[in-house]
Length: 402
Image (cartoon, rainbow, N blue to C red; front, side, top):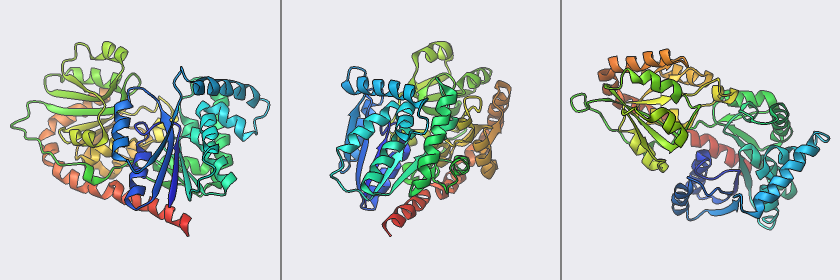
C-alpha cells in the first residue's frame, strides 16, 4: 500500500496523522506526507518527528509572510471569497474561500501527478478539496479524517457564510470518499447526519507502550499533583475557571501546565500563583512519561467556546486515562458520555468555579484511595490503547486493496 497523507498544518499540530503514519509504517506501507513548514514554536518538535520517521517522504510547503506562497494564497483567498457569493455551488471557489492553504496544496499536488498512490487520506478541512481533486483526476480512492467538527468551530469572520461553505464542502465530497473516520462518537454522528454517510470512530488514544506506571506515596508527596497540557497555554481553555478554584487549596495542591505559554495569559493569570509550574511543549513520548508523575489530569473543555468543543474528545483525556491518572473533567456532552463509562476513575463537574472547587476538594478528600487505584486504572486503560483502535483503521485500509 502506498499512502499519500495530506494536512493543512504540520506533524506537531496533527497527532492523529502521526499515529496513522506510525501505524502504516509498522505494517510495511510506503508513506508520503504533504504538509506545511510553519516555522514557529513547533520547529524543534517537528525536527524530532523528522528524525524518527526517516523512511517517510515529507513534502513541506512554506507559508511564512515573507514568502511568495503567502502572497499568492492570500490574493487567491481574497478573490475566491468575493466570487464565491456569486457562485456558491463552485467546489473550487468554496474550498479556496474557506481555507487559503487549499490553493497551495492543490497547486503542489499537480506536481505529484506522475506518482502512483493506492490511497489518499486528508486531514483538516483545508486538505479535503486538494485530495478530492487529485483522487478524481488519477482515479485513486480518498478518505477523510474528521478530527474536529469544522462547521461547529469558532469562525472569527463571515461566520454564517463560512459555516455554509464548510457544510457544502463536506456534503459534496465526503459521500464520495472511500471511508470517513472521526475523532469521537458524537462527531461521527454529527457528520453522518450532515452528509448522509457512514463514519467510523477512531478514538484519540495512544499506544499503551508509550505510558509507564508511576505510583505516588502519601508519605512522600507533600502536595497533590495536578496536570494540564495542550499545545497552547492561553485564554479560553478553562484555566480562568480552574485557577480561582485552586487558590484556596494553594498549600495542598501543585498544578503543572505543559505547553506553549502565551505571555499575556502568563502575565494576567500566573503571576503570584506560586503553586503553578510551567513546562515547555514536550515530544509525545516525553509528555506521556511526564504524565505518569501526577495524581490527576484536568480535562477543562468549555461548551461555550463552540459546538465542536461540546462534542469532541481531545487526546488529553485519553492520555490522562492511559497514564492511570484520576480525571477531573468538565461536563461537555462528549466528556460526560466518556466518563460515564468510567465512573470510578474521575469526577465530572459543571463549567463553573464553584463546581471545579468541589471537584478539587473531592480529589483532596479521597487522595489516598485515588493513589491506591492508580495501578488498576493504568492496567484497565490498556484495552482502549491505540493498538485496539488501529485495528479498525487497518481494516478500512485493507478493504481499499480488495
